[in-house]
Image (cartoon, rainbow, N blue to C red; front, side, top):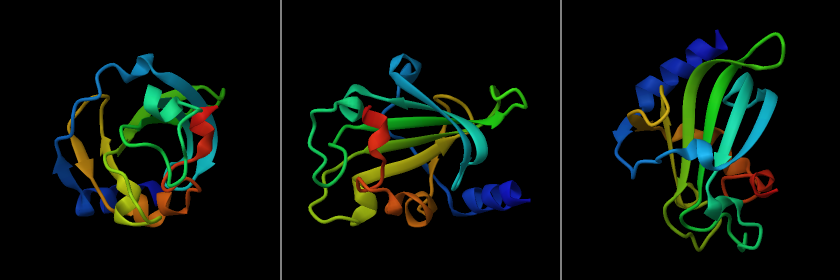
Length: 145
């Protein structure tokens, strides 16, 4: 039921966007995470980060640097702990620098797609409901390890 409510909210509030294509993000650094997470429920998440987001030497004064991209493939969590079917792809692009924390969605464009490199839609609730609480102005430091 929770997933149905989330999908209805995603469709009702989403608007199409046409950002720069990601290309083959599966060649980027990958981090796998399982278990419950706000907005993603109990799932298997394959998280890919580009070189800008993965750079441990970049400053995190007000979050990740401009140009950082984080792609999360959200999969069902199979009973054996492995990834099941793809639910959706969540994408974060740091498009602009911010000078004050928590302004303008932290400089991120949050979008999602039903398929890898498929058409994307944007919805404000990714920021409003979850990512605003992340310690690095919309994201977590774990992506840099």
